[in-house]
Image (tube, rainbow, N blue to C red):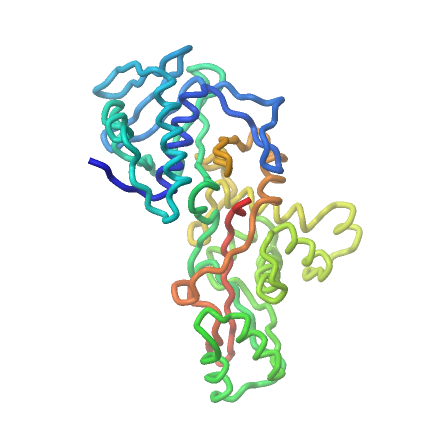
Length: 361
């Protein structure tokens, strides 16, 4: 009997099966191409199921699956065949839910895979040992351009920045008029209306104290930096992180010396450090102390179905990849509670939300 699952779930399984079938994975370049100089042999993959841990040991022609109640050998080419069926099904389906192709459900039963998304507590999708079976395991998250790209940072209300409404003091009827302007998601319209009426939105603070502290680990003024990037996303209509960083360099919200900006690449460096932190699992509402998490990198499924490896071992490449291939996104104003003037202690603030995701191409 066929079943359906999301493209995200199928993509994770596709990447997993590709590793088992190929027995190797290319390191990715910043411009999302395989680096021919770094082909990493995959010796073992560890994956969690609801009934325990599975080890997938890759031999010359077979994959040995070892679990608490199983020890089985499966031809590697079978994983490649099923990976191909999954890829084709994802491409042929316009909606997010994809029905399992013929033969896939039987194969999953045969290899005892019941959870398309691995059951882990450390936010990794699976762990990989490179070069040899007893090598240390490296934890990865799967990101896919053939399915829905879930955000690197989706912090909800905790990821809001507060901008004080300054310039002139609006009476309550004017505040109500601004908040009632346009559709609910017309954040830009309300920002421009405040401006037309003589108001100014002046950066104040990070709304959540934990996120404020987390950003301070990157830089004591990181809240102002990323608040300005978020503001510019709305006003300038640009979303790519690299483009927004260029705008921030021109405006220089931290008022630092030109030499630090041009010679040292201050803003690019701070943005890349932030991107590396959120890729490794930093979240707005959970205390972050800079300690490495279980997430060592990501396996990116490209639009062509290639699987590329980015990890902390190639830190600069990983940072450049994130910098060139991320964007700011616009979350739900209702869910994340931003985009309106709200009164706190006699002062009106306008909140903007920070949400970061990978670009589709």
